[in-house]
Image (cartoon, rainbow, N blue to C red):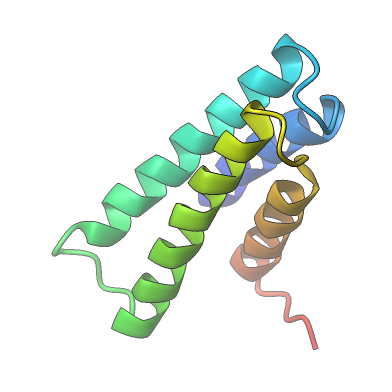
Length: 99
């Protein structure tokens, strides 16, 4: 389920212009922000059983993704790093290790 959510949002980011040029980019960043906000809330839930170091790392990553998405929206960046991060998360969810 998590993989599918990341796949859908990442596909939207890939199909949209990398800079905040039109509504497709704005929509893709908005959906990406929703996904990462949901993930952050799930990580903060006391019943979440992930290791604390993993939760902490993902929470920091979530904060970075949200800040970077905002930067793209105001013309100070592009979506490449957001795509790269989502792809890395997808590889992790699939159990593929980057060496």
